[in-house]
Amino acid sequence: MSAKILIFVALGGALGAVGRYSVTVAVTQWTASSFPFGTVVVNVVGSFLLGGLLAASAVDAPPSPEFRSFLQVGILGAFTTFSTFSMDAYYQISRGDYLGAGLYIGVSVVVGIVALISGVALVRQLFA
Image (cartoon, rainbow, N blue to C red):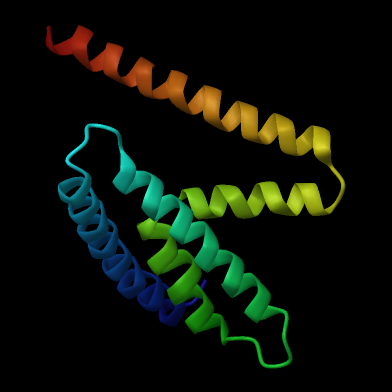
């Protein structure tokens, strides 16, 4: 792990976090709804952009490791971790590992929600 790549990741992360916040706030204000449309937008846009980056990486002149880290891990990682989840599922599906992909998707979603509920319950218990 190089310091140069870490700096690119950190800079991209700052931009991605600001982008996520800005898009989420704007979409929430625009829709005036309690449904998390802002989160849906950043997750779908992030997945789309990561797909484009993956395709661009397969051409004759792929982005440098620093630029790829800046975009993929930094900007898109902070904008949405759902894009990475989507990429991992895509890789399993593209390898024909449908059972593994289904397990990965199901476990990630279900266990993630259970972990969130457990965290809420633990903190409520500790501070009640």
